[in-house]
Image 1 (cartoon, rainbow, N blue to C red):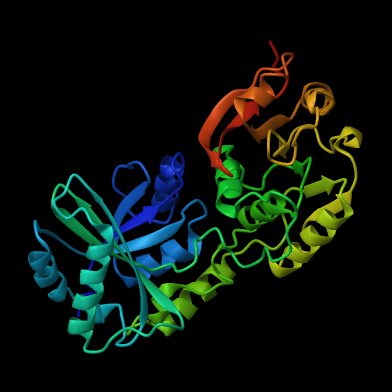
Image 2: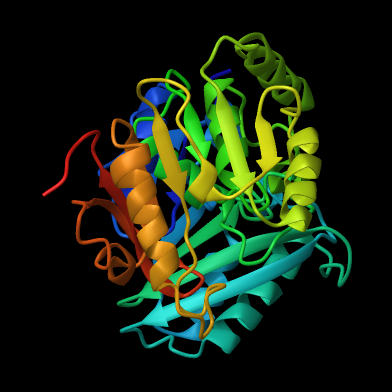
Length: 374
């Protein structure tokens, strides 16, 4: 029996769509042209499981349940009742229904959500439970056209499961992974995180270098589906485990001058299964020296309301400028920060690679190539 192919959509933070596209290609899929907010692709259950298991830059994976035109609420209800809800939702499952509408006669999102819950209850034969694990349902209404999607991921994919100990202003895991992928990092060059915090950069680097899937240590919404194929999921995990690289990649090191951050980073490393592979130690970035002729120096420096507060950070930025331009002059140096930060490092030439939002602040991934300065 041929497995049905579904329309899927990998949701990404704005700015990471092209990276996600290349990730999907690397998985052997044929994604559609990226659009703002994500990348579409087609696949069966295996591809849905694989996307959740392996995508490093995505937020979640949606599966299209159906789409249709509706100009009034009775029509909306009739169309929704006919959708194959039972394929993805068990009777009584708690559902989180979310709607968005633009340029449509169906403009009241609260009522759209209410009608959807009523249609689901009718189709499934029992009202949803108000507690317990839930299934998110998304309705997007535009120009009287309704798209209904089921979330297959559950929690955001950036929540890998390893980061339970935190430091101040942590960087999301998928943003850290995206920064590394954009730099072409694959574990073949040494990497130093100049201000490691809770260890997100070095852990994501370790996962990439070891070819470990970011989703192997967590649960997903598709595990609640009526026809969840646990043997297939276990097979995919086994295949991933066989493909892991045990050592054999270049050194990964993180430093921080906050003892609490170091403790958190070590705890997160252990949960990620990388405690023996990555060095994290107490120290000041001003004291760093390169071990190796070339490598990748990376950092997410404080700025504005993110850790900096009202402090004068100009001396600290000069230290970073010296570190990148003198001490690590022959390395690729990467900073994740607003343009105003690198704008103060006038002796160096940084080029933007990625633009996205971090903590509500627009930031870019700035790169200084080895040995290059104005």
